[in-house]
Image 1: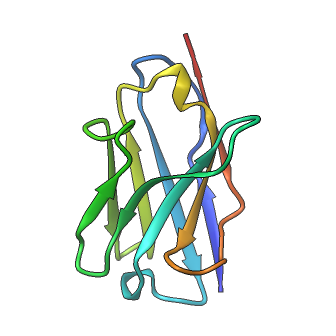
Image 2 (image 1 turned 30 degrees about the vertical axis):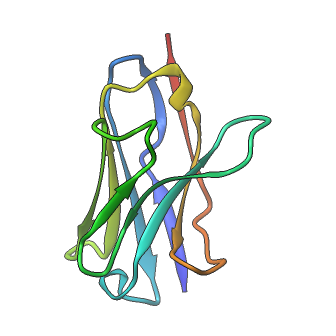
Image 3 (image 1 turned 90 degrees about the vertical axis):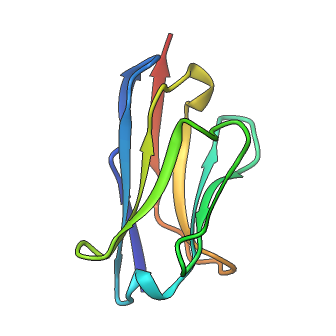
Length: 112
């Protein structure tokens, strides 16, 4: 069972990025999934979660700007990030909820 995160990059403030977390060896629709992020010198923190039934949760700092969703055809969980701010700069990780199975991380850098 592996998770592969992708879609990060360098974007100007106010721009958008779409991250994707693709699973191999499992069907993501059977699991609650999460996106976390870790900025330099800071602890890793929860960004968004989607339950098996599609109920979503967002950290206050991203609510209204980020959207977590599933693409069952791709076996992925995506994170659409709009109105990006420099403080969103971090490495973003996906995870199976309640486990220690993480994707490898994808760097998001937002320039001012």
